[in-house]
Image 1 (spheres, rainbow, N blue to C red):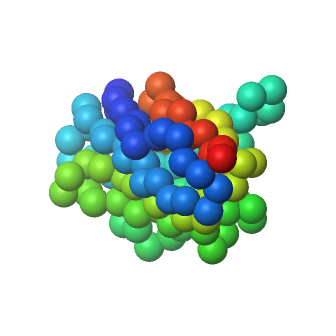
Image 2 (spheres, rainbow, N blue to C red):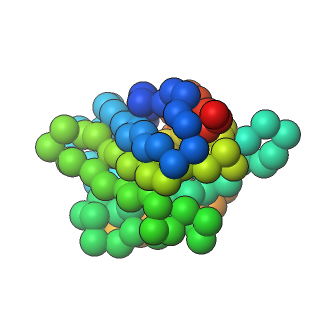
Length: 125
């Protein structure tokens, strides 16, 4: 079982930046992928970025390409989501999750086995 805890959310003006963190524990030494999802009020949860354990493979949902950057530091068991040029439509609860796989990652929630509880991002003037 992998425990995931997100942090770094908050209120930011349009055009601003935030960096989310996802700290993992419970699967020491085993490789795992990380995906970031978000859920806006009244909308379905959607995947925005994912990264393999090695960091060699990364994927982004089209609306965040060029603005969001996913990364990870396996020595710190932490993944990050740097969000720049934020827009009001980026508002929502952001979750990190893992499918507990090595060598791949996905933006689909169906394959996720462990989830964090989320951190709220609000983009508003």
